[in-house]
Amino acid sequence: MKRNSVTILDERNTLKTELRSLIETAREEKRELTEQEEGRIEEIKKEIKNLEDELTELESKRDADPDPDKENENKENQRSMKKNFSILSAIRSVVDNKNFDPITSAMIQAGKEEMRGMSISGQIQLPVEQRTITVTGQNGEHDDVVSTDLYNVLEPLQNRLVLAQAGARFLTGLVGDVQFPIMSNGNVAWEGEVTEADDLGTIFSSVKLQPKRLSATIEVSKQFIMQDSVGAENAIRNELVNAIAQKLESTILGDEVGSTTKPQGIFYSNDAGLQQITSFAELCALEADLEYDKIYDKVYVLSPHAKAHLRSMIKGTNNTGMIMENGEVDGTPAYFTGMIPAEAGAVGDFSQMVIGQWGGLDITVDPYTKAKNATIVLTINAWFDAKVLRPEAIRTFEIPTVDDGGEDGGEG
Image 1 (tube, rainbow, N blue to C red):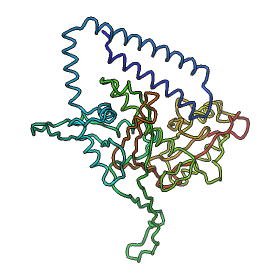
Image 2 (cartoon, rainbow, N blue to C red):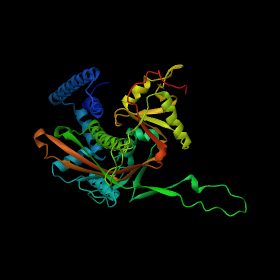
Image 3 (tube, one colour):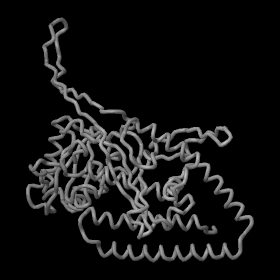
Image 4 (cartoon, one colour):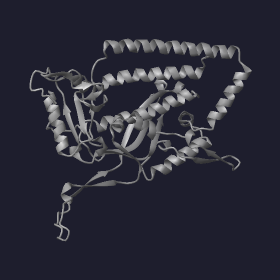
């Protein structure tokens, strides 16, 4: 199949995403790049250079010998693309101090309506859920824009969150504070058919979700925002979603205390320290504690280091099998992310975790701060909160050393 500029740009953006991922993973894990990672980074840089050379050659040929049929096809594609919302087009309008086109104006208006009283400061507001909007044409005509052409943040965001894969509930489109009532077992009892029911007392608790502003920044080159291809548009959308997902998950899976402006990380231990797991027996005891609290549907969420420890930890002196095999911890599903503290892990029923989302996206376009680098800074504000409804439903731990299976390993 003949390669075109869109295909080449797609490949280049994919490679750049992989490059950033390798570097960010090492930074999140607070370690140096491995020899294999450094080798892959060098390969990616060479591949990107080759793609850019190929793109330059392709553009030179097109300028030297234009194909009328191809020009007509490109013009038709451009006209078709302009019927859809483009975040790159919106950014260009802000940078060039131009008015938004009708599609962009309608989208931003929909985003402002979705904010519902949230504090906004950026030039661009976007709704986070797909919807159908109506755009008024210059002659008073109305064009219905189908939802598949609109900006969609929530679906790719949830797909990127390990917490969502582990079972956490995602509540969208919230308005104001949300209270979740939680009833303890003390409210339930057996009584005789005609005897007066005992007053068991009101043993209710509640968990409140409140919108907290998440702010993430990404940098894009001025040359990149001038692109008008599907590949470039998808790349900037992916960058926005990745920035939100990484900030949200690293906070929820962090070890910092919560506040009125930030959710508390589930690994916050109030100086008590996380439970230490150095043997299979201790891991079994941890799962037993969950079952005593009537938590049966459980999964693991592990850091890469915790995963490595469990893969090398045998079950006991009488069992040479490893605790973790085939992506499971002794048969229990496990998920992995570099957003967790280095040697930590969590096990439990993650459906007891609720992630709330309010409003849309508020984007500030700053073409000045890094203008000397020909770079534009995008600041994305979004509103989230996260709470575990029943604290006993998820247990956190750390695995500081690799067990050699020599002590009290247990049979499981």
